[in-house]
Image 1 (cartoon, rainbow, N blue to C red):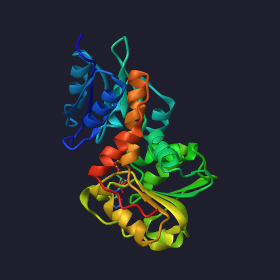
Image 2 (image 1 turned 90 degrees about the vertical axis):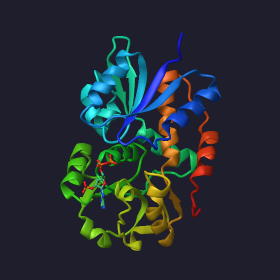
Image 3 (image 1 turned 90 degrees about the horizontal axis):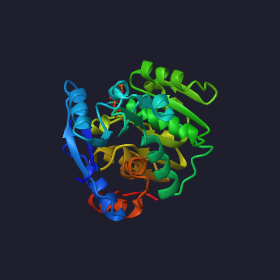
Length: 281
Ligand code: ATR
């Protein structure tokens, strides 16, 4: 019997680390698998996914720009993915239909709490951005016990829509980007904008950063470098990129598909060597 087939769908996808991460997990646990990257522009994504399933594909990761659109292609969606409004993991059921999960939120919390050993509970949090990545982060951080979350987005209506979807007005508020200098400081600042992808600078006030604050960018490598440089200049206690989150979300997907969770530390160390992080802790 041939190896079970998995893939990550996105556009662009050439630089995805997911095939290497899943290959490393499979090797570590002796799980045979094939995992490829499939470039899928929005116009043909649904047809490509359908063809992958019909050809025997067992599961898939979904990344930009399809995480929200893929919800409509799932026969069943987990509660967290439904709340986040985004799916990053598909599993083909026996009836041929897809089940959708979202492991991004669990990956984020696991990276912060377990790899970096930081307690999220009771932190006053600031979330920059209100797109697909921000939505999963917001629900996961609130589930993990952050005391309150202020959501600031360049387009304020999207921040309001996210706050409405969360529905916890006592813990979650939105503010205008122009007001960032007036909000006081935060013990947790999460950059969920895609500004780094286009090398745009966010121009954030240093006063946002509380002593010992954790600043976290959901992206990794060069894309995160401007935000992390800002965080270090503002004397944040901890400044991390999202490489650990990427590896932890992959491990959660792997566990859904194969029933076993790999040791992520060895894989993290391997990739960290290629993408150095000049952490300030
Ligand atoms: P993703 O799935 O990565 O979240 P997305 O849904 O396109 O992608 O969301 C991108 C996020 O980055 C949005 O919050 C976007 O703000 P808008 O809603 O105003 O578009 C934010 N973003 C992108 N470039 C930005 C910039 N230069 N400054 C501030 N926010 C930016």
